[in-house]
Structures are given as C-alpha cells and as structure tokens.
Image (cartoon, rainbow, N blue to C red; front, side, top):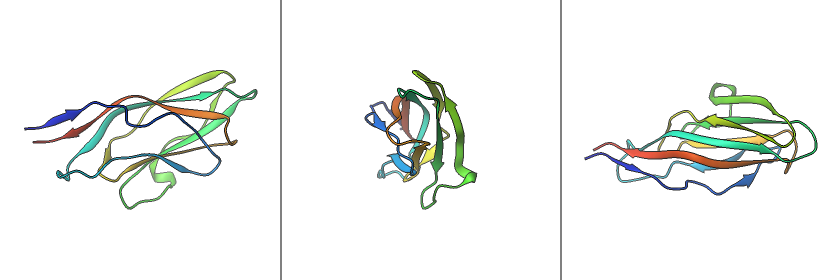
Length: 117
C-alpha cells in the first residue's frame, strides 16, 4: 500500500553565497520514495534587491546548470518569491545560494514524501 508522509521537512535558514544543501530526501526501505509537490519561500529582508539560485540535485550529482530550476531570480526588498521544487528521488537534494550572505532566508511551505506500495 502506498503512503504519503506530511511533515515539516526543514527549518528556515539563511542562504549563503556558496551552494549549500537545504534538504536531502531521506533513504527509506523503499527505494522508490520521492519528494513531490514541494513549495519553498525565499524572503529578502535586506535593504537592497537580492537574487537566489536554486537546484534540484539528483542523487550522486552536483550543482550544475542542468539541475537549476531558479537561476539568479531577483527578489525585491522586503518581498518574497515562492518556488515549486521539481520532483526529487531518494538522496536527491535541494540546494540554494544567494548573491549576498545572510540577506535571504529560505522556508518550507508545503510538500510530501510519497512511497509507492
């Protein structure tokens, strides 16, 4: 029987100028577990427009143009942008960076882990 797990997948954090892992899909006893329907929010609380780049990195992969789903997206002062994260399989990772350290934060809005049965 398939199952869907709803939980808060990560705590809010600040983005840095180097690509950092925000969330990794956990290994389970079922190799086909996937993360789907994830929505995240990136908020700019600095005093200038800032940009973010986000990647959905497959298991065993690394940050590259082929897995970027948001590339240098500008976020105005005191504003935010919501992003839909592409489907990630076991050990796949959401990675992100900003054009300035500690100017943008990233938060989990929604999403779920799906395990087919």
